Image (cartoon, rainbow, N blue to C red; front, side):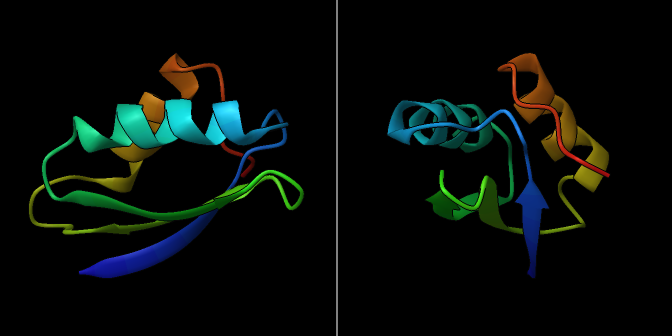
Length: 69
């Protein structure tokens, strides 16, 4: 498993975090660990054998929270 912190400038509240958590829960091998609306980032654990980082970022973007690169 790999743990990564993703920055998403459009995160503004707990509702945003819940939306991201829900979107990521649909992906195989992804476990949402934490979200911080003040820091505008989420911490995710994932299995690179099951899902790629681009897929995780894409799921967040589809919810309206593009990842800052």
